[in-house]
Length: 161
Image 1 (spheres, rainbow, N blue to C red):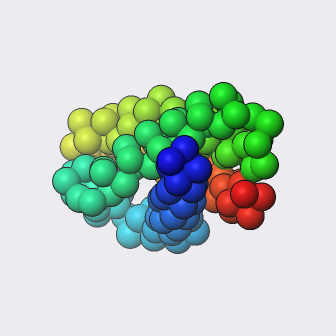
Image 2: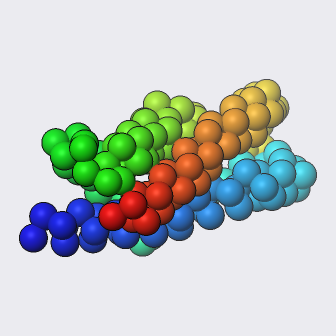
């Protein structure tokens, strides 16, 4: 039963991390650049619309479910660290929770909240938007890398089992 639980968690975590890595990669690779290019009011309005819709979508169960799976996986692997793939599972779980979840909560969400409080057309929004594009994208790069490395580590753990 424990083996089945570990296998299911590894597969779920790998798939969840992969899906989130792809989403974050899209924002890092082209979405934020496009939003910055279309003009301040339109870019801010579009990003605010994305931020409203994303919390009402299937993203949220995937976001929280993958985070929970990674945390549980890391904890279970710590208890059985000597088993094949356990170290990779611990590293993948911790990297994901810190590099994706903690970064999102501490950096990306407060930046989103700050952006939501702006009048997109005001001149006061200009420096905030420029800083938002830079800072939010930097932390999104961190999330992309953390998710991608976690996928790789979970694949290593699956292969080792």
